Length: 327
Image (tube, rainbow, N blue to C red):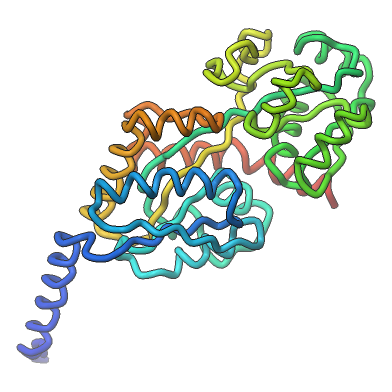
């Protein structure tokens, strides 16, 4: 049987289409870029995104517009970017919550591993373990000993089932062999108010949320759940120093593009992020917000992809445990 050959116009069209995509990638960016923040305006992710976007504009030579698309724990905004054109003009901020926790807690219309291209890790935010002034222990070792002797007695306030404080608490239980009583609140603020009133014993939360109370001396800090002390709170020991090495919990902020975005476009976006994080004003602003700027080697797309895979392996079983306990 003779083989039918494609007609010449079809071949020419395919070649022109490929060349057009290549030229478009080379000319990137030729118009404004939209960064979707999957949370309401004014929150930590929104502020970080706006600080970064303003500086990226300088590197890219085009406006970088932040658009807030909140709802469903961030999955609405992230889903929008998953469906966007893979041309680099619509990218998303993503967090440990949107890309790891949501994958275990919800039935998503997208795959956080397969439907995005990693661009760059922007910041990490270690969590800190704090306690009510009425809670008897004075340091982390004493707290673990007290919790071991009093299972299910300590009340731990969280920002809701499946939230980062809840997941961190489940991890703490597993690593220390203790048992806690988790009480979900509608956010961090009401949980903190109850801890100030002595109705909550412990919280594990982002340092940025706890820092005002720590500076005021109204709560006790047991440890930063990191292997490095933080510049904004240098007096708080790390968990490694406090006697529980490896009890590390940190959320992160990163930029992702739709799957299939050309490598040259990813490279230009990544370079803009790297330039921005190297700016002393940007770094100082992030530090003020209790964010840890990652080392240069951790700012590559490859490093971000590896971080996501590692966090999936580490946190998915813990998130599923948290979900099962809430049933």
